[in-house]
Amino acid sequence: MSQKSKFLKYLFALLMFFFFIACKQKLSNVAEIEAKLSYTTDSVVAYDPHCKLLNTDKEQCSYIKMRYPKFAGSNSEFLNKEVSKLVCSAPYLIQQNGKQFSATSITNLPQEFFAQRNGDLNEQIKKGELDKESLDQILLNWFVDGQVNADTILNKFITLSFYQYTFQGGTHGSYFTEYHHIDYRNQKPLSLSDFLKNTSDTITLKKIAKENGVWLNAENKPSFFEGEKKFYINYNNFYFNTQGIVFKYQVYEIGAFAEGSFDLLIPFSKLNGILKTEMLE
Image 1 (cartoon, helix red, strand yellow):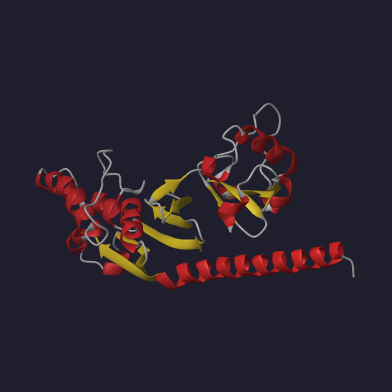
Image 2 (spheres, rainbow, N blue to C red):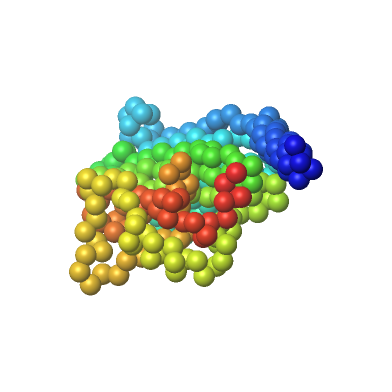
């Protein structure tokens, strides 16, 4: 065997050795994160105390219910604060006077919400402005049911999904799903630009989505973008699955309620040179 062949053989063996060490270290890092960061699911629920005025079962009264992850281990204090901010300032927390409500903590959320909401009702009841029929409309069959999930925990970030269904009377309720990505190591929220190699790639991404995007609920492919209506992407609401990046369109955003929400998938195969693949390791 020539000196050159021996050298190449040893060089290849050396490269394979370092490759093995790097892979082992990467797996070790992921396992370490999973071992240090864990969570359980907790919940809060409260019924409107005013329902006693109607002499009806508690289950028929207005209520707020929220389920959420409670983290333990590495960076858990920061993550629990992020979950608390997400839940306590949720879009549904709007009072009858139209003002935004924000609770001091998740556990206090239901009680504080009803206390403030009922403060307005108490004044109306004292003044005789509300009869039983009006109270029925306000207090019965009204609810908020929400859930925060830890959808994805990767080496560099975690994805929290927030699903909420609200019914406030009428023929049907309303629902939405939001996705929040958090760099829990450096303790900061992430936006789409953090996953792209260049901020200008959003323009390329939009073009790829229009030409190669796959509607996951293809049976109800939206007609919203037909004709003169311009195609757009909500860059603030997205998630990753095993196939690629998915952009979420809420109910009513690009279609009628009956059409539901829409998920637009851009396959990873179409995103070469655009995504920071190291973020998804």
